[in-house]
Image (cartoon, rainbow, N blue to C red; front, top):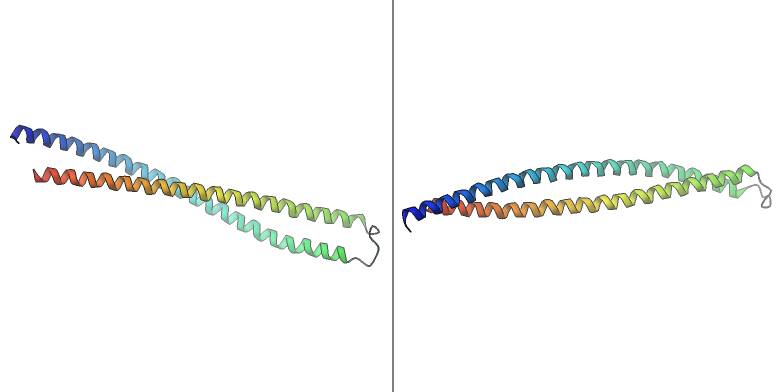
Length: 151
C-alpha cells in the first residue's frame, strides 16, 4: 500500500469515525428522550397506583357499612316481607348502586394499570434494543479507531 492509498484510507476512516460519532450523539439524545418518557410514565403509573390504593381504602369501609346496612335491614323485626319502610328499599338500592359503581371504577382502573404496564414493558424493550444498537456502534467505532492507530 502506497503513501497516497494510506492517506485516502485514513481519510475514509476519519469520515467513518465522524459519522459514527454523529450517530452516537443522536442515539444518546434518543436514549435520553426515551428515559425521560419512561420516567414520566413511571411517575404517572405510580400516581395512578396511589390513587387506586386510596380508592381501594375508601371502598373497604363503604363495603363494611353497606354490609352492616344490608344485615340490619335483612334481620328486620320478624315482619313479613313487604311490610317494611319504603326507605329501607331505597337504602338497599343506593348501597347496591354505590357498590356497583365502585366495582366499575376498580375494573376500569385495573384495565388502565394493565395498559400502562404494557406501555412500560414496550418502552423498556425500546431502551434495551437502543442500548444494544449503541453498543454495536461503539464496538465498530472502537475497531475503526484500532484500525487507524495500527496504520
